[in-house]
Length: 297
Image 1 (tube, rainbow, N blue to C red):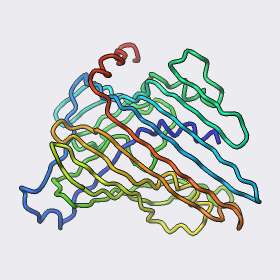
Image 2 (image 1 turned 180 degrees about the vertical axis):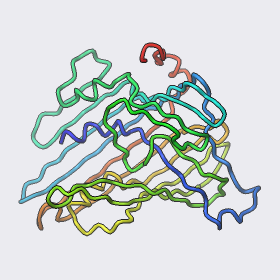
Image 3 (image 1 turned 120 degrees about the vertical axis):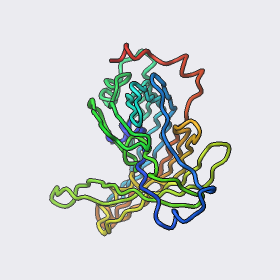
Image 4 (image 1 turned 180 degrees about the horizontal axis):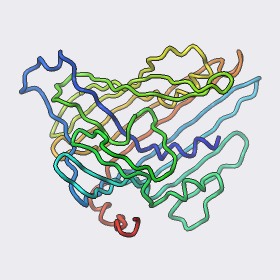
């Protein structure tokens, strides 16, 4: 179950949002909201990310349960900012990880403990404090350039790293969707592409904060249970809060609740239950814990 220990990195994830449709454009301008990123040079946005997942598998009468609990602090360290162009480093600064599978002993590690990491967490440990990626986005969050510095990437059904915002203004109740793809392994080790989309709904805007609902829909028909079992981690539902006035993500909550029957034979079953939360930390925490950019470059 080693693959589950890397899920938190994806905690990082983010959203590509397509332009609103023609019906949306017909609504009065007074009821519409323009969502734009407004990052500042040398700004640091730090988020606490918690991911809890439980996977239960049953095959040939044998049941196994795997649990993962990860709490991490990730940061966007903004560098250059030019008109309609913002560059930031994405960094995971600290992590607490717990993993337990079947009858095996629970494995724990805290990056701030000073202890050497267990082997199962060694790759994650090697990436702590160093940029996982350097990304340049426009004010709508579209990636203009991205340099990955190695490391595990898991989208958790959220598409790109940065939150990509609509081309035009949107009104309460508007929905929009963003296409994406998931690579899975089919019969005879054949790689298949499953097309999905993230569907967003602007729920409300209050006190300068936009609340956006999100759900992931598969577009490619999935008749093979073994394929579906590989896609379930991408089928998220949840809520995003975006600061309209200041131009950055405030929080994100995602949930997964999937059951797949027959993924490894007629009597097999897999259940996947998970929750991920991401919350912007207050400025006092940023000032107290932020390493200097020169230390990490």
